[in-house]
Length: 221
Length: 223
Image (cartoon, rainbow over all chains, first blue to last red; front, side, top):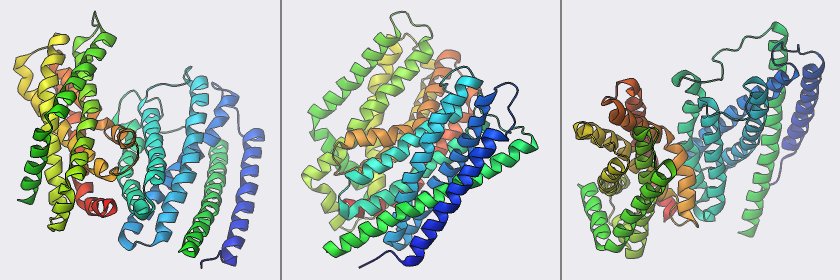
């Protein structure tokens, strides 16, 4: 029967400690050190949560794609566990992006929601990856991994559309390049590092559940 | 030639189920009618509203056609027979895609004149171009739809799940079809929105390529 190795627990504790410490530092920097943007005022600071969450989402769904392909090639359950865990954590970050976006939009564009390409394509991606979880829980256990891996692979089609939407469609309100002061850039980099580390800690924790579930399934025969 | 036999088998199954075909036709016409009421009675931009109505009706009604094809196969045991005969999975996929494409094409032939007449945008001069746009859109719809329908086979509430997965995936094809049809009906040319042809073609090729790679796994998972 599979058990959680000690090094896994130690790594998890280290990841959580480091990520929470870095998140605390980044929040402190955002509140006290980040310059207040002239036009948007304090609301611009949403940027330091919104952008890192979007980057974490991209990494998470990208890993789901890579792990799904790896599962289809090897049929090793561990890759399926990585794919579903990463997708689930990615959904949380994607939801943060979708919630923080309207707060930004209200201050910057004077509307909670607008049907501009990046927003729309991101919402489509969120719906599709939500569908991934619903399908996974609707499929019989015998074919769950195969169906999930196929979906995790196919859904990557939304990836380039979301990433390239600001270049492909006119009328995008999202800028192609963001002008920042060096202070802003530095704090954004710290925030990115903090939230990516937080993603890794959450992923490791979620994987632990999958390992325990696999062990329980094995024990049940 | 396997794909041709699968296509013929599916078309024969559809032809035997005339009551379903009639319901499908009436359902798509009802959608056209409801959307006409929503936009009308005085249309602001008939070409835009007609193209949106045409493609929304086709996409919604098409879902029923895609799931029905698999239901018929499960009921008759045809799918098992094809697998036991050792047919190449991609040939089976292609056969199903072609039969879905033909079913959607028949639906298009029914809905197009209704949308054109109800919204008064009929222009026979651009009919070949509209048919070309439809071919490109329906190939993509059939390619992705067949893959997703096979994936959703045996699931509870699969029509709902299929809609949740398929419609968002097909958004580039849907927007392209609406924009190109609108441009043809409004201006008689696709020049201002020509780029959408490339996007639709890429989606078509992607759908067929993904299925070539993954359909065997999907088929195994369904067994």
